[in-house]
Length: 260
Ligand SMILES: NC(=O)c1ccc[n+]([C@@H]2O[C@H](COP(=O)([O-])OP(=O)(O)OC[C@H]3O[C@@H](n4cnc5c(N)ncnc54)[C@H](O)[C@@H]3O)[C@@H](O)[C@H]2O)c1
Image 1 (cartoon, rainbow, N blue to C red):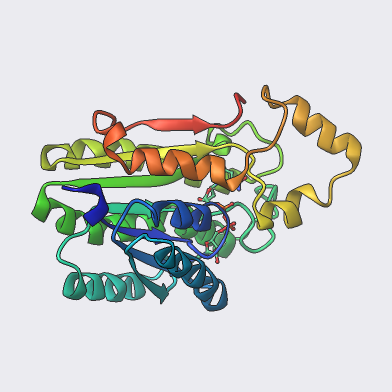
Image 2 (spheres, rainbow, N blue to C red; image 1 turned 120 degrees about the vertical axis):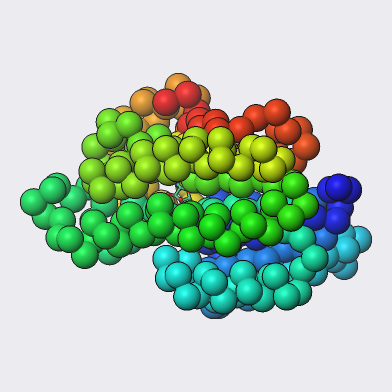
């Protein structure tokens, strides 16, 4: 299919890597569907994306304020997609994070069941719910690109995140690899990006801004490339994994971590 005629869905599109991905994919697809819980943030991105149509990128953009950890809300968004789009080609599951309710770095004794479940829901169940709706639509055209979000924290070697976050991202890896095998016969690829520390607004506010110069230097020294990633550097890999250029890649966890 002509790449200019593609339909892409992005979760977590109001901020960070999801937002950067939306702005870049807007130049590659004809329909962009954005999902996020942050209504205001979502309209801001929708406006920015719409401005691109004035610059010659013909694009329809729909924004759905939805919580992608909630089955009924995900089903509702995809019901709209089934009704309004003739096909679905790309799904980017960018929702996620390590500090949903302040549990970043929490020890097992500090973490209650609700926080554990919320972490798994945000990082792993959200991808399951969206993939389950997207796969039948992609199968219809025997074409699809799914991009999930893992993290360098998945190996359980990072001090500043909880075991729950590491477990949720290790879960994303297993989910990605198995789903890739399941959907490969239908022309659908499924890969994940294991991001390194990326300076989104959230990371700046909750992790980077609050560090001393000494702590910042220690973090930078642990990264071979010696700096944090920008959201755009992650989004470029999203665009690659959503494109023809990655046609022969599936079931891969692609590290975009500055060499950590
Ligand atoms: N930023 C990093 O340093 C980093 C590092 C490793 C992995 N990652 C992963 O990359 C992905 C993107 O991270 P980011 O830093 O851009 O995040 P972010 O916090 O900047 O953006 C996440 C977006 O998801 C939305 N969101 C949160 N919960 C939601 C829900 N239940 N339903 C719908 N939308 C919801 C938020 O409103 C926000 O717009 C995540 O999976 C994260 O775990 C990020």
